[in-house]
Image (cartoon, rainbow, N blue to C red; front, side):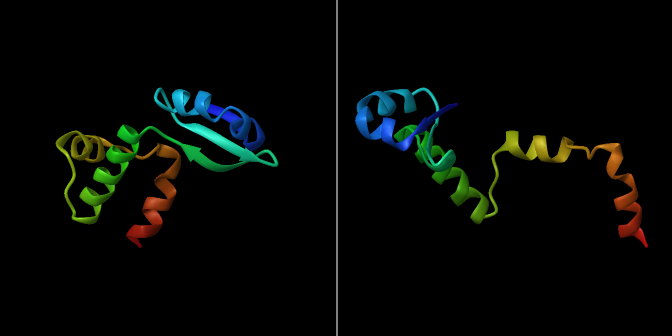
Length: 84
């Protein structure tokens, strides 16, 4: 992940477009994230995943990860509250 000030992106846009091919580039204004530059391929994957979630369709890997997920035992008291 790359964090850069907006003024630097303005002056070196081509450089950060190239960097976005390898990972998200977080553009910051006043030290806080403002926008993120991502590759077209990465963006297409995000859109595809969002549409799948909206349609209730998840790929097998995601389903496996979700069904195998376990909460940290520190949260057991909260689970007991739900049972009451």
